[in-house]
Amino acid sequence: MKNIIIIGARGYKSNYGGWETFVTNLIGNYQDKNTKFHVPELTHNKKENKKIIEKDNVSCLQVYSPKVGFVTMFIYAIMALKRMKNYIKKNDLENVVVYVLGCRMGPFYPFLVRPLKKKGIKIYLNPDGLEWMRDKWAWWIKICFKISEYCMVKHSDVLVSDSKAIKEYIDTKYKKFRKISYFIPYGAYLNKKECKTDTVNKLYKKYQISENNYYLIVGRFVPENNYELMIKEFMSTNTKRDLVIVSNVEENKFYKELEKKTGFSSDARIKFVGPIYDSDSLFYIRRNAYAYIHGHSAGGTNPSLLEALASTKLNILFHAIYNVEVGMMSSFYFSKQKGDLKRQIDKVEQFDEKTIKKYEKLAQDRIKNEYTWKLVVEQYKKIW
Image (cartoon, rainbow, N blue to C red; front, side, top):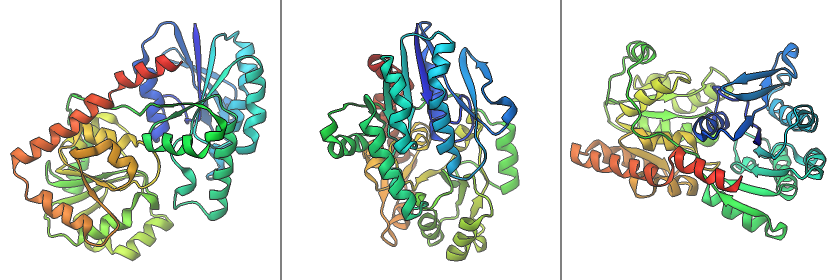
């Protein structure tokens, strides 16, 4: 029996973001009776600390961390990895692989993995995107992320990048470490059944949204996803379609700054609808958008981009190397230059049904040929 421990996501079947989506779908598609998965889960309830919950034959060790902003995940990741030595011994686990997601643990990492390595356990690391590039972090936090990346790459046995561009960066930057390095992307589902859920009905009614009559943005509400740029450019167009924004938006500092800079509240087409975690509802909303706009400028292969290509007819992406390698010729691209996104929106507004179908097929072919979960799982089975 092979035992695979995945550390870094908030949990298995946890509704939040990229890592949680990845872990849930990877394990759900793995289908190997000779493999057992173990996924530590973040809990803010002290009473649940160290408790093991079984979900679909996945052992989920509850790891307590207090809510302390961005430091929460730092503490959680360290505590999860720290517990692995005793967890492995207590549960008599053999043939173990530890897969760490993200570079959060910094100088603590060498000391945490040392006892595992002494037992012959291989440590795999997915460095994620270049976290230190994200606009939301202060300069000193960015320096901490750079140091963390260095320490964690150096002291891992195998590196797995979810973007070709990230792999090239890691291989070049840390060439002297001579690490085994792979590119394995995220996955997405094709030909998913379309279901108009109650959530969708309520959402359409509440915000007066109709099928094929809106542009769509799905992503975390952070500056590096270019919300200011996308909203300003959209507001400058004459389209009668709406801009539907699915995000964890709250009326926080960034939201207020964005309103002040763009004046979006004066444009009835701009509709913040909050987060949607139900996959069936989100698929329907993507499938029935006129076009998807993807503003992510940092990170690797983004799950929301793959899901858009698998479902949305037209896709307009920020011209970052990570996005271009995924979308290729199936998508349209915009830069930060004023009027660039407006031109792309004006362009796709003129498309006839035949042209829309052409780009829809190109997008779905990208997923079919490179990014299905079946292909992703096959690659992980080979390296594990």
